[in-house]
Amino acid sequence: MKLFIFHTPELTPATTVADCAIAIDVLRATSTIVTALAAGAEAVQVFSDLDKLLKVSQDWSPDKRIRAGERGGARVDGFDFGNSPLDCTPERVGGRRLFISTTNGTRALQCVEAAPKVLAAALINRQAVVQYLLEQKPETVWIVGSGWEGAFSLEDTVCAGAIAASLLEGLNCSVEELAGNDEVLGAVALYREWQDNLLGLLHNATHGKRLLRLDCHEDLQYCAQTDLLDVLPIQKTPGLLVKR
Ligand code: MLT
Image (cartoon, rainbow, N blue to C red; front, side, top):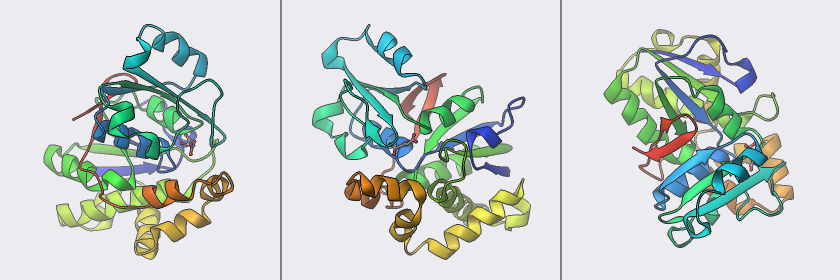
């Protein structure tokens, strides 16, 4: 297995695909997607465009859908949810489809949607992702961070490092053997430095600070937890994620 990490959708190669691509948006799109599926959502359908989301979801009866829209960390007017994983309780999302558009996370998923296998990862489901990779052993794996509008983000890279560090143990190999690019060594080093204080790292991250200004303290606490849910979102058709 060769693992490549790309910090943002913009840095991800556009003309080839990996055997397995994993999109990460710890704060907060992939944490929300994992939580929604764990709470019994029928599926999660992702959109980079808000108008397209509204148009497609119109065909679903209001009691079978939830529309989630986030821009700049805040809920978009007229949408049921913003992008807080804590809204995704069984009472609110059980049996419904979550239609979601966020600033960066849904774009990361769309940038790898052509890969034969597409997964969504966050810290909260790290081990479920690692287990899948150890079982399936894809030859090439890309991890794509969402970043923020093209820029690097600490939270997505530390999650990529958490996946890589656990893979190294599972495969019993060296980081040099696993790494397909320099970013893998950087991400593993970042994770090893902060693994005992992931919440502290999220508090230092630019988007973490943005969310704290929006009073989302509990979201940061929730998203900083590792291996909380044994749930793996996997793409069924482009843009549509279900629980594996
Ligand atoms: C994004 O897609 O950029 C994030 O998920 C933003 C957020 O925290 O809602």
